[in-house]
Image (cartoon, rainbow, N blue to C red; front, side):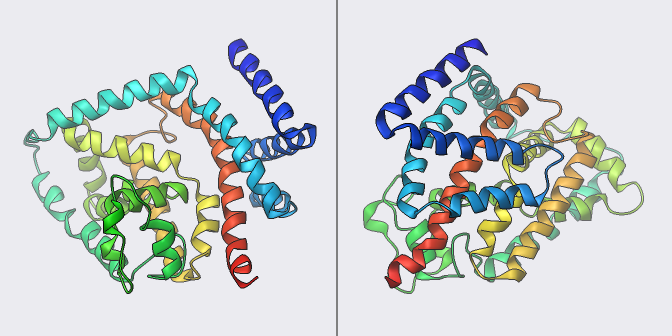
Length: 313
């Protein structure tokens, strides 16, 4: 902790030298605001206050704070807890790969539950995808394709940029997943799981069987543990603000309802009293990271809201 504080002071000195005391003061105001909004007793008003603070800055000022604030976010990511958490995730991935070909141990009366759970998440995801939801703009809009699918990179090489009239189905996997991570939804990591668990655990001894399967079937355990991590990294209040940019209240309601259902049932099946309660190192790493990512999210929302006005100007 002493080393982290020393690094924080050094980073403050760098910010003061590069942008002046006023810039450092604004970065600190934003940092304190997002930390206050993370307190358990804070409500939506605390998040609104962060939004109002960011909106009070001219766009160029907000962009400068975003650039300088990235250093603080990097500091939050590079702590010892995050490094240990990365090792844990690497171990989880290794275990998942080894278990990919495993077969579940036979469980009395559980075959019907595994079969029953398949159609619901597939149907839920299929219905949602066909409605052409978009994380950063109206469904299928040019803004969405520019924001999500047109960048060069491993998931979308420069020669594979979408042509005019391209559909949501044309997006590559990496920009699709990255966009949902930026919007704090992390949708690919959990969407549809809640509907599947509801079908499997609904009525009778369904929940008891799902809990037994979680304990006895390693592949299902890894699946739910990874979904739990995605849920823990999701911020519902900030995600709702990103989803509102699309102008589709029905899709926003669908995504948030599925999030609530998935979160509730993942906790019920795993028996955890809160997300990541069995992984304290990873939980602490996420908690340390969140305020810094919150700041960048609010700044990005500010830029997204200003984008139409800048184009008209």
